[in-house]
Length: 353
Figure 1 (tube, one colour):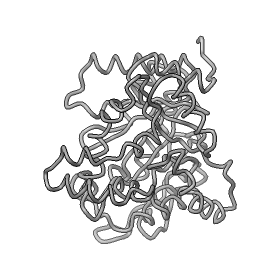
Figure 2: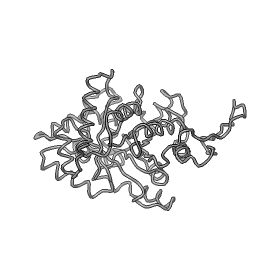
Figure 3: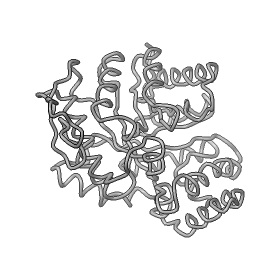
Figure 4: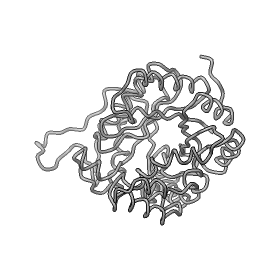
């Protein structure tokens, strides 16, 4: 299984230089250990691509992926331009264009875009990006959500199809972050990889039908997509303590990241069979009873998708990933020891240059 390392530059109120250098050093270690990829995220205030450009300047081999760039943040052609430029500067085969929708609170509140029809928007967005990468002719697209050239209200009618000046790598992979069945099927139909929401050894089977549906629509097979799941790692003798430490983040995501009607993290918990807990967490969190919301997060919900415990326990739980379709696992770990141990379990090949 290929390994990735997650970087969380976005979770600091200020981008502290020493912290950034510390994260860079860990990415460089991961590269030496044989990790395949590094993944950055964006949230309102910090973009995902700039950190990768900085990392690219200080690494040579590790692939550079976003998990994710938010679709509402930039037109599809802008995303294509950024990833094409990143790859051109970093070297061939390194950029991964990871995309996600975010949610209506962010899309409408931060980006000033309508939530609209997200599944149809994703179809247009991915199609346009792939056309830009391919550079097979002047770009035009007649979609239900995006049309190029633009001829809608306010247009002068002088827009013309254009072709990218930069000759990009036509094979830059596009990954989609999805959880629900419709968007997951779309991912399997159009994308090169998947950044799944809520995918664990215990829940992987829940996505099989949607993925197969999308593959069948395009005449593709499972070998045509990468699946980059994720896991938190903690080598510790206190399993319960590590689980408890992770609960506040899950309580926030399930209880407060979105509205009562639109919360994809809550939906992921429901999908995995924890519907009663999800409703309880959301109810408590929105009522301001956050400590109780944290306490309501089930231990097994966290433990199923994590690598927590002694080295032997982690080894046993890491082996469970081989029973899934995941081709990669993005690791979030606090120590170099943990990064090195997972590289050992994955039989990663160290790099000397």
